[in-house]
Length: 250
Image (cartoon, rainbow, N blue to C red; front, top):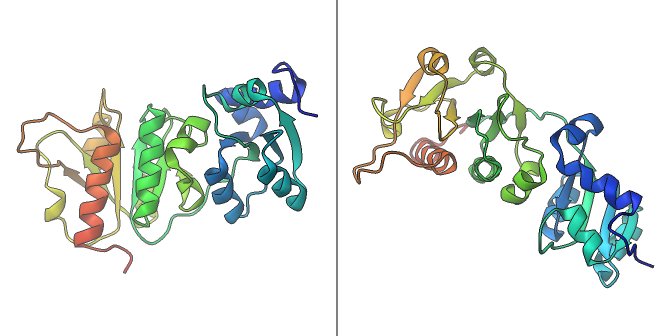
């Protein structure tokens, strides 16, 4: 029988994973929907538990075949675990994967980017071009449920690593590119190399010391007169330019 109360202990414990501190303390997070679940399973990530509706036969069969703890819930219970108004089940509790190494191509670094949608989109774009993703303190938690939804499974297809300094990136063989609104070189002018593209928060940009210490400053030409793009759009344009004209890691 499904859990009929959204105050059920298992439901409440899972719902708490929408809090950053709870995820950090427990090392767990939530993924929602069959696509994210499939991506996680393909990467070898086996959920600790699975919340599904009583009529979700596919999720019940999956839980049985993978020996995953299954919790059948009603719509109210699923909505609380998912944290969305119209959740698409199932919702799974997984262990947050440890930092993964970067590949041979470039890396885009979210430097204090606070918007979860931007961070998830950056991860998705990086994965699409074979790049990796780095994040500094002050960036939205890459493993937050909102970021995972925006990433659409890309977290399980690329390297995700915390970054604490430019020196860390340089020690890995990257030239660091600081994105600035004006006065920088156009991405199309850069020679082939392994690049770390540094993207700051939309409201404040990159810290001055990061800009001054980076290898190169770059600016996206905008002849239309727009002041700037959002963080995810800027990252996508730069990654496309560098990947298309100078395929990295070849």
